[in-house]
Structure formats: structure tokens, C-alpha cells
Length: 183
Image 1 (cartoon, rainbow, N blue to C red):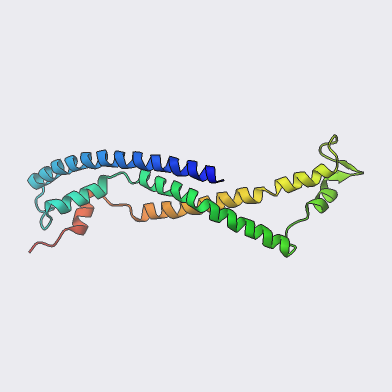
Image 2 (image 1 turned 180 degrees about the vertical axis):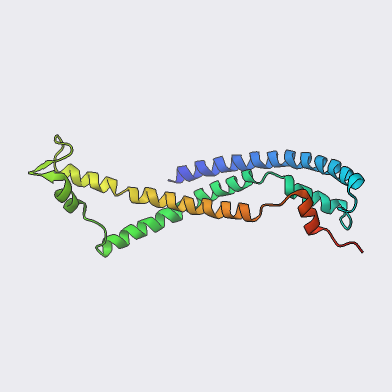
């Protein structure tokens, strides 16, 4: 398990480094676009820019035009990896508690009830009846699978909700929201 997390951490670090390099290039292109947009709006719609300085406009332009999705997906992937030990610990504790309080199904009883008939398995006739208990025990591992999937769905829900709540409007709307009123 430690090797998995070391590999995942290395992969996430490489992705983070690639994201950092990519975002620097994109921010440089956005700064260039902001200069052109400032000149165009200053010439064509100076009333819109009243009460707004160039650095404030650049910040608004960058907020509106910077692609946010890659950063959110990188954060979600890092949260997936970071939350996996806690998720597996909680699922193991849940399985232990269900077993301790007698809520967990007994694999041998289920096998005898549903899979074994007259000393032979119903499904796989060539297997011994003891294999049915092992098979049911293996199928119960889906509890962990679906638990991990549920935790990942919660992580995605959190980041996608945040992504849409913080979505900027159009450039004109953002300028109108953030400019200082003219004196």
C-alpha cells in the first residue's frame, strides 16, 4: 500500500508541476489579451471602465478568462488519494462493528442456504461445497468497492459544487460588479 501512495504522490507531483508550467503560459497569454481588451474598451466604452484602474481590470480579466477546470480536477485527484486511507479505515471499522454486533451476514450460513444442495454446489458442480463460503466472502468485498466509490462521488460533488458556485460571469458583468463608483 505504501508503494501505491508513493507512486500516486509522484504522479500527482508531476501533474502539479505540469499544471504550474501550463498555468504560467496561460496567465502570460491572458495578460496579453487583457492589454488588448483594456485598449479596446478604453476607446469604445470608457464609461464601463470608469472607476477601475488597469491592475483591477487585469485581475477581473484573468478571473473571467483563466480555465479553472484543470486546477479543480487536480485538486479532486489529490483529495481522492489523500482520502483513501481514511475511507478504507472507516470501512474496515464499519465491517468490524457489523461483525461484532452480529449484523454482518454469516458466509457459511448463506452458502448453505443458497448455494449448496445435497452436499454439492448449485452453480459450479465441480467445486466442493466449502468453496461457496469463500465465494460469498469474496463477493462481500464489494462493500469496500462501493464504499470507495461513494467517497469519491462525495469528493467530486464537493469540487463540482465549489466549481459552479465560484463561476465568474461575463467580463462586462464582472467589471460592473467590481468597479468603484465614479466620484
